Length: 248
Length: 374
Image 1 (cartoon, each protein chain N blue to C red):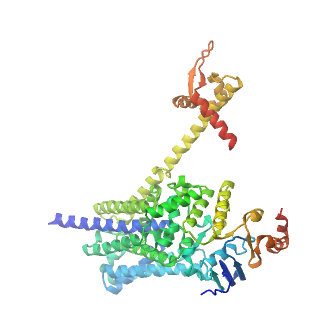
Image 2: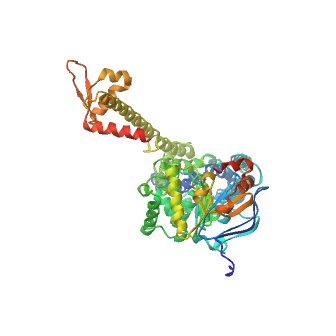
Image 3: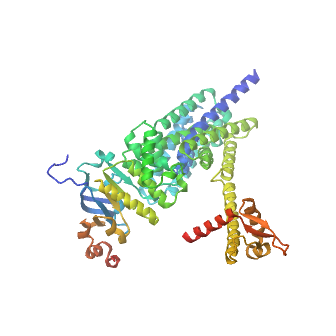
């Protein structure tokens, strides 16, 4: 149970260590992300960004440490958490259409034995309109472009109607218009009080998109409000000296 | 009397083949989508030692004992594959290959031993290698029917969970589905589907009856439900047709015939299915190429008209041929048929000339604009 006198963080990570085989993917990290921010997780390849999200969602078991979402363990918070996995983790040749995939976001709320019906389809259509994909509802997912696939995944997370969203590289390999649509949507979610935690790979847009930053390289390098955290010194420590130049 | 008896045997065989088709068709769709074809092949080959041991322990051809043995040794093989993949650096395909080979070798050794020991009584055992539909007994149908009913009911009950776990296991786990449990359930049911088909199709080829109908169905289906139903249809048809053919020809094992029929469905689907079939794709490619050539000819006439400051400028066919070579004539007749061009004369010349219709001009301008935007 959460202590009412403590500030309640949307994401609270304490002494977390995760390993794949012998290699540590995350080493003794502590993170606090307050509610209502749009936070970027940045770091070089293999720095544990996706692992952090997966650990927060309970998809990979920690070796040590624990994670709280709004003061609760993930197992009690699943209905308040939304997730956008990396696009490449699924088989886009699966025989189904766009509307069906978006409806999958409601399976958790539906529970066992209940089939999605007209109400669920209407919610899914609403989410498709929000990402500008309403005309593609009956399109086979095998016929989508990368940007369209990503928007379908975002729509599926939207129907979850969560308070905290985890997004794993939602801007990877998408076209410019799609990126603009996604960012506008995420910002409007944040403005409605939702918390967004986004694995992000493009340093050139960090300042433009986010207001909170977690800099990761197996260990935590720095975290906090964007302006105070996004410094050349922190960048150098996260990426090594070569990347300090990236900042324009 | 003889006719009644034989028709009853045929009925039994056909009903058994149809029930098997329902099971293997439905679960084959999930096996295919979850990338478990090779696991299926390993489980099926690894069933052989269990079949022989079941026979030896029961002391005769008792289908219950034989199938229990098959399920146990097949399941053991599946566990061995998982353990080897987790504990060593071997890749899954190598683990599958090793386990398949070892289990099948043990099975063959046991089979030779059993045949040496009990002679004629075990003669029927080798039928499990390639399948023998005619050996199906009336009482076997109850087992098959029970398996089919159980498999289809379970699939209906966990349909949306099975779909999500097959498509996106990470997301399924994130929303709280017991992904490991659903995956285990699906894998166990695939193994049971294989065991159910061992008598009719045999350990060596059973995986084909699991995967081929699903592969054929994938070509046509636009939803998981359609894929499962089509897969069941192809599997039932393969089983029934194959059993009929093999029953009609003395000494012809059922498995190979069933598999050949199923493969026929796959070949047909690969070629002809709309959207995904090779023939369809080739036709679509040619249609695109033809449209592109027509657009290019239209663009040339439009450019000539603009260069001459005359929207109705008649372009000479010989000129167009210089530019577009052999494709010219086909493109001209295509464009005329679509109402984008009309043929005209340009006195005193006698050769054919072509000018844009208003519709053709609009199309050419739209193409030009599209090219600029891209």
